[in-house]
Length: 139
Image (tube, rainbow, N blue to C red):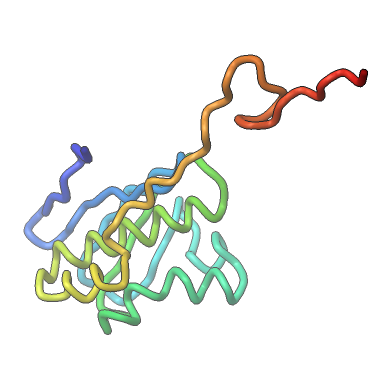
């Protein structure tokens, strides 16, 4: 279970945690001008490119909250795509906590569900990966 519950700080700032694979994103959502920063950088610098931009804007587009909140994110672990998934999960949870009536919209789109898929552990006796077996000797 997820022990990190969303909490409201100072009456108007909401803190949540988003996760995907090994990535963990700590999200702070407060009323503001719509600026989003990740690890001190603008989100456009941290996740460059139109495809990634389309993905991280999706929760605010669906809920029509673009430009309404200032979002600050600290993300660590995983790769670029899993960090993006963690950020989207954290932002969605923060929006749902701040505006409970938008929760059903986010839930329907699947943004509040943590993607539980992770790398399979390596088994003993195998080659380099979880299921790759050593080549059998020729007869």
